[in-house]
Amino acid sequence: MLVDQGGVCALCRTAPAAHVDHDHATGGVRELLCFNCNGGLGQFKDDPALLRAAARYVEAHRAGQLAGPFPGQQRWPTG
Image (cartoon, rainbow, N blue to C red; front, side, top):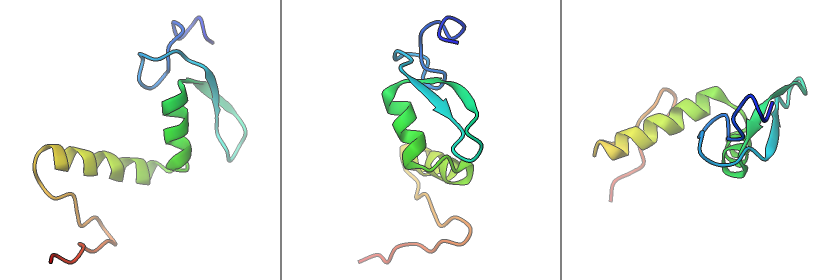
């Protein structure tokens, strides 16, 4: 697997692949990740909806726009 990935993380494709990533629900091995990408997935609890929300949040702030509200979420009070 390490050779197939060229020795780099399956997500960022730059850092060394040092951690075997697995699906916490099934235990199945996915691919090899670097320390940061592996930790990031863990912090977001492998939740695709939360990861998409995080991506929208970062993209909106890069564009100078507010990120929310997202479905089921309210804006924070201003002031």
